[in-house]
Amino acid sequence: MNKKKTHFFKFVLYISLLLIPSTSAFATEKTKGTDQEAKGGFSFETVKSEKQVSDANYFDLKLSPGEKHKVQIKLNNAEEKPIDILISLNGAKTNSNGVIEYGPTTIEDDASLKYKFTDIVKGPEEVTIPAKSSIDVDYEITMPATEFDGQIVGGFQIQVKPNEEEEKKADGAVINRYAYVVAMVLKENDTEVMPNLKLNKVYPELRNFRNSIFINYSNENPAFLEEMTLETQITKKGSKEVLYDSKQAGMRMAPNTMINYAVSMNGEKMIPGDYQAHIKVTARGDKKWEWLEDFKITDEDADKFNDQDVSLLQEASFDWKLIAMCVGGVVTLGLIVFFAIQAFNKKSGKGKRKNSSKANKKK
Image (cartoon, rainbow, N blue to C red; front, side):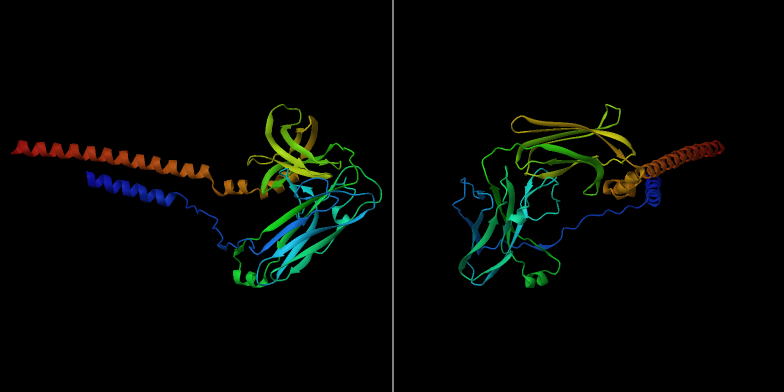
C-alpha cells in the first residue's frame, strides 16, 4: 500500500508540473563598476568679496544697479600632473521633491523669471590647473541697470573633466563622478519681498514609468519659500471620496521657479473621467495657499499611460487568476484520483478476503 501511495503522489506531482504554466523571473543584475574616488589632489574655495553681506560659505552679494563686479573661485591642484576642470553656471531651479538645484538640470525656466542668472554672470567654463599649483578663476557680474527688489539666484558646478583614457578602459563600466556646487545670491537693496504661489495646472502623466497626477505651481516672486508643506487630495468630480492623496513637508522653492509635484496613483490604472484636486500649501511665516482645481483624464491619456506603466505591465505578465485556477484544477484532479484509488483498494481488499474465506470452507 505504501508503494502505491508513493507512486500516486509522484504521479500528481508530475501532472502538476505539466499543467502549471512556467514563469520566468527577471532580476536586474547589478552593473559592475569601478568606484573612482573623488580626486584627492583637487580642492577649491570661494574668495571672499568686499560685497559679501553675510558669513555664508556661498556668494551672498549686494550690488548697485548696473554695477560690474568680479568674484573669484580658487582652484588647487596637489597632484604631480595638470588637472582639467569644468565649471558650469546655472540658474537655480526647484525639483519635484522640493529641493533647490544649483547644477545643470532639464527643468524649464518659470514664466515669472525676469533676470536670468546666466545672463548676469559670465566666466570660463573650462580651465587647467598646472601641477602642484593654484589658480584664481574670475567671474564677472553685471547687475541689471534698473533697480529691482528681491533676489537673483544661481550657482557654479565644479568638477574634474572626465579622462578619455579612463572612459575607454572602463568599457561600459560605471565610473562615479563627483561634482561640487557653490551657490550665488544677488540683490540690489534690502527691500523684503514675500514669495507668492500661483497654480499653473493639474494633469495626468507618468513619473518613473508609473501613473501619476502632477501638480504644477510657481513661486512667481524673487524670494525663497522655506519650510513648505504640500497636501493634495484627488477625487472624482462631484464626489467626496478620496482616491489618491499625498503629503510632503520640509520642502523649499527658489525665487521665480516652478515645481512639478507628482501624486502617485499607487499602481492603479488611469480611468477616463472628470476629477478634482484639492491642494493646500503652507510655509514658514504662516503662509498659506489653497486651490480646488478640476482636470480631466481623456481616453487617449488613459490608453497611452496605462500601456507604459511598468507596474501594470508586470501585473499583466503574470495572470495570477489563471495560475490559481490551474493549481486548483490540479489539486482537485489529484484528490479525485486519490479517492478513486482508495475506493478501488478497499473493493479489491474485500474481494480478496471473500475469496479467501470460500477457499477455507472448501478445505
